[in-house]
Length: 229
Length: 361
Image (cartoon, rainbow over all chains, first blue to last red; front, top):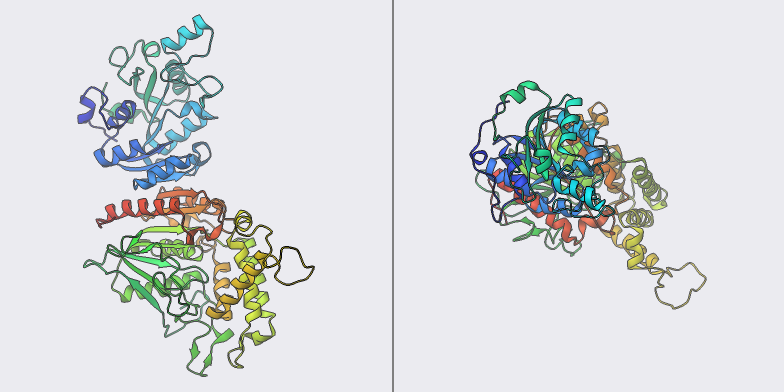
């Protein structure tokens, strides 16, 4: 599958009022117009809505919370109330061009199984997660000896839904071990702006509060992809 | 030709329409009624004088907006509100068919509806929607005529009738058949009606339509007339009196044999069985937009049964939405004033209308 460089991708990623979260804008910019997208853990449907309105995407959502499902349905979006870990197995292989999992993988019981499902169902998977290797996390652990509480990880250890923390470096090594190609990797700071050197390596594991990965199992797909660097 | 192999003709079918069919005939919504419902969805029912069963959903400016959509509802095959059923007079004998009426299926009901849609010149329905047995018909429509359905909303439904559902129906049928006035189904000939049996059938069924919480909220253990129990068998508790009332009003509007035939049709419903044992196969490569709706306290058509349908649709990467509506009102919730349910219907219909190029609220 080819990807074109899109207009949004050329622009620096900045926050637009009345628009979606900047990390979601980055994800949206990586999705080819007119494609089929499954947004796992789609929340209130803001990404799906954005993709439908601006990129003519045939989108579906999977969401566990009743409020999120209601919100999606009220907007006329297609969403299934369900649990990613239990329900992804029902989807056929290669059913979607992209499967998106934003800020959710760290809250799953079995992230590896979820990752495998994403890459099975979609030609590409788009995964974002909070980076535990961010310098603020490192400093808090080093100097305070306490579990980090930061802008992107605002809750205390006992209240956080996040049960499987990882760093960008961890994630890369897991992808390598799973033979999943990392087509693109980005890191964003706490305001969702590109962190460090245009959000890329090196130092993304230190400077990024959030990692955004475009993954694929097929090396050709990885080679064909042209997107923001 | 019926699924049982018998042929029937001619088949009179009664239906009601609301709103106006647009010029390209793209705004038709087929509403499928439940077991004891009928085609009088909205407005005053000509026989009972009561308002239609979805009067709060069908009308100008309502969810099924008659200013935008053309609403059709067909009395099911086997029914007793004008369509071909056991109470129809057999022209050969001049008597009601009674048990001489052939056993029909949900598929047969849908085939009969399709003839109505043909007669109206409609190639593709914008939407098929219904609850309970109506939801079964919706699933059958989407499976049997995927090219004739743009969107489908099965509500409080299932891809099959469960063993427990069949069991409850059997209790109802046995109540009717053990009433001496049933006369082996030929009660019309001797000018009788199995009122008692049909009323008991309805009472049993009515319990399954509610939930423990709903019963408790409505009646608790409250007594009907006295403040103390009287140590007898009159309808002392309010809930008893309520059920007796439900039973006795039902027999005035429903034919006992129709009840036997329609419950049987539901029992036979199993979309997986008719598709090589695979519910997913029933919806192979479907392009229909689905919105599956279930109610959390529905124990007759539980959420898990709707989830099976959703799984089968997901296995085809179908365009499906699914939502559990939180309510304690049980199976009958689809007939009641449930704002969350209406929101979902509105949102889905708005989205589907946009994709179909239809105006919507």
